[in-house]
Length: 345
Length: 246
Ligand SMILES: [Fe+2]
Ligand SMILES: [Fe+2]
Image (cartoon, rainbow over all chains, first blue to last red; front, side, top):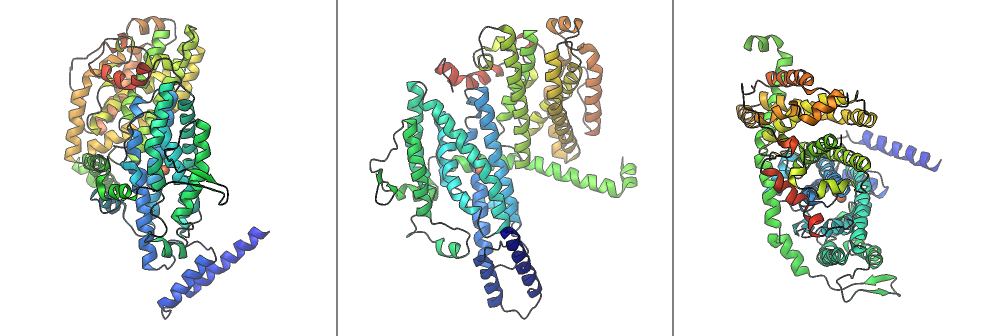
């Protein structure tokens, strides 16, 4: 009943806005006020709705960065597909990396609903104009890294993305609902791999610990700079693009993940990590922001390799994409002019 | 029978492995997803077949023992599937030749007197039908697309055709099993397979080399130099840390 009422209310609001929009005399102030009131009332913004330019730009930037991260993120894990140690693990890993490609696709489509062009966005990635999640500039050095990525990197991504399922832009929020389901599956599979390793032989446990040592801090950095340093936060939260701050999300992640590491019998590489009874949260040590900014600037262990791999795939694939397009056009023409095609043949 | 199942399994495993090498590097994202789909299907099929072999042998082995603990000469896959990915045209031609064969093979295997194999074939046929449609469509795209794609497609056919013959030439095991109605008579299947290939090649406006020499040996364990490297990579962890659960 309550849900129905809300639906009716949303319906009325949408129609109301629809009626208002054609009036050209409306000042941008009014449009902006309507826009903000929709956001305040938790009405999703849809592609055809009026929106401030800055909102559109912010979203295109964020969604495309997210899409790039999914695509670049295929590389570190793809690195182990041919070395997966059992058929079961190989299938899980193939399916996981494939899911990430799917996420990239939905997200590029969501960005396209805002008027962006996928090919242009990809160009921005390849030329370094657009960023992607820095975590993927770290290498995968042993098999447990595949578990650690699922557990920590997908885990951190979910913390962020669960919030984004309620983001104000409709297509982005809906893409996130679908993506989140898959990410949480990845997270469980990653943790299950970590369990097999942590409870396995001493060598396997050593691999698991080594992986945790290398991925822990970069995973914490995934939430971005401290709130006090973050440039985009204020406007993004007013527009309900981002509904929780970087530090809140990071704290959530630490609180959930530390007990999981304890269960595995692994040591989180942070001497300052301890439960704070008063706060009801874990306290944790200082993040090395110099490292973070250095990797963002392009000096991570694999920045160059990741972009080179994407560029190679893009350039080597150009003739294939051109062929597919040329074929589609010819086919269309043959359909339109069957006689000409016959004569030409 | 076991050797025959291993032949089927090894074909699927090794081709799936090669396709997995594309993951994250394909010419476009849709293609990345599609190639990975085929890799997933084939690896899944290999898994069922190895499980069946383990069951029949009754030696307490599991699926991974066959994939990860045999050396190259014990692998019975055809030479075609272990050939390197090359450019996308080579991957595609390798896939198309294999799919045309594999489709007709599994179609016939649904009539196998071995009940398990008939059931397996029926299940896999759905996947393989999709693989053949996918590779046939791309043969057309590349053949019809641009001058460049047409030339690359023709070059790949010229390079890989020498491995097509092995698929349709029965070895002793296949002859023996065919006489018991467990697998089809390849010499009969050959007509249908070649007809499908000819149809798609003609539509793509490319030609198969006439009278090409056909390499063989893979099905009996005599491989090209590539297989050893595939196994070195694939089996690394199982060999370096024997006997563990992963
Ligand atoms: Fe993802
Ligand atoms: Fe994921």
